[in-house]
Image (tube, protein in one colour):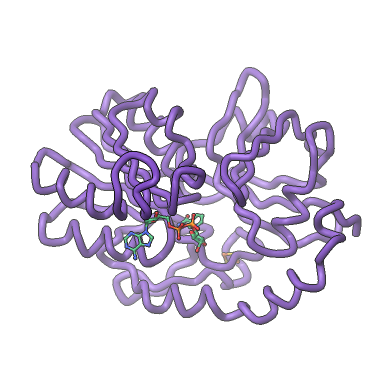
Length: 279
Ligand code: NAD
Ligand code: FES
């Protein structure tokens, strides 16, 4: 069992859970994730390790409540326990050792960019982050990223900082030159747009893919994605891949496969989710 030591609401539907997981806190690396099972028969949810404290033995998980299982997870309070957390899973981020990196985070994807920026900063790389949200209350991890380098904040409606998509600010930084690599995490249209943007500049671009996952160990095939015409499993070969080689059409299509069932489950969940359904 893993005790929740802190619960923080980051945006209207994004919650940070700091959870006891001492072994994972010691060995996790940027880009890795865990699979969380709230209770014995609950759904398995893949979540990136957004931060961690090896001394306190805790890891930080950032959960966007979009369906039944994630709503049940964020209904937990500090002091409650999570049944299983397996990990760290996936390949660590390919971090450069010198130069200047552009980290682009869209919405909840900003939490996934954070450990990457931490790793780059530790390597002595100059980090500039461009992060965005629909409006001010959807911007997350701004202060944490400011500790690691320059941060440009964008909001779609202009309610905070710069108006526009993250790609607008990223384009200007790329045009100014001096960017050696780009890491982009967020919704699929955003990652596709960033990859299209960086291609003419010839800047290597790494994106973090979020297909449906089940076992997280390469056995079920649920997380398959197409990279440079080849099938890969995001859980063991990724989740990060060369953005210029990803088949984004296939990824978007596979992400919508279970939309009807997900909507039905969320509708059935109703009040039970809000009070923390027990299986
Ligand atoms: P959102 O839709 O609010 O978008 C966040 C920001 O991304 C926007 O403010 C904008 O700056 C940028 N953006 C969005 N669409 C864009 C486009 N077409 N072109 C350029 N920029 C664009 O994001 P959200 O609601 O926080 O995120 C939800 C999505 O992120 C879900 O689909 C979820 O599956 C995905 N997600 C991905 C990962 C990952 O590892 N890639 C992790 C968590 C969530
Ligand atoms: Fe089953 Fe990746 S989640 S193979």
